[in-house]
Amino acid sequence: MRRIVVGITGGASGVIYGVRFLEMIRRYAKDSEVYLVMSNTAVEILRHEVGLDKESILKLANRVYNEDELGAPIASGSFKHDGMVIIPCSMKTLASIAHGITDNLITRAADVALKERRKLILVIRETPLNLIHIKNMELVTLAGAIVMPAAPPAFYNRPRTIDDMVNFIVGRVLDLLGIENDLYRRWSGYSEE
Image 1 (cartoon, rainbow, N blue to C red):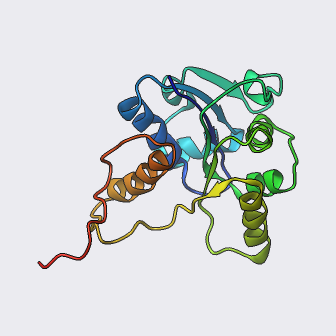
Image 2 (image 1 turned 90 degrees about the horizontal axis):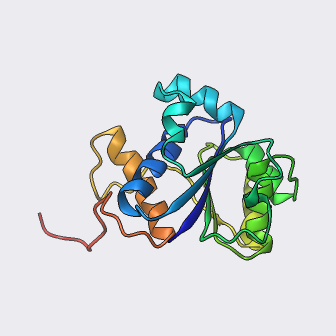
């Protein structure tokens, strides 16, 4: 059984990626235990951009924590898990992780993942980037995290809908966690058409 810690932050558009990721873990890795933390800002953005309330998302996780619950099990290195994904990851959260600021449960759990050498995937959504963002991405990468921009998907699979674009990003995150999925068409080389 896999244990996956999921953080959903606000501050930039992209909560839809976190929602779809939770849905697809249930589809492709049914035996996984999901530990979810949503920032307060993410809850506001969820209502505005996706038209959902927090309660509709909570059922997609086995355990749910508030961002101020620093005593939660996922805040400790003794809590073993198979990876943490922050999707989307705001620039504020990225900066906090890059500089070891653990003032909420999302950043504390991320800090623990890094110190325990566990997989940490940060799906950033901000664009364009300034030098501070780039330096923070460099710092977390050097510390062992994987930075994955939720940039437009590859166009070889010819996305036609928003769902196609979201599924491409979520499928790639599932790939990084070793979860088999068929959310997007994989590159198979140039073909004559």
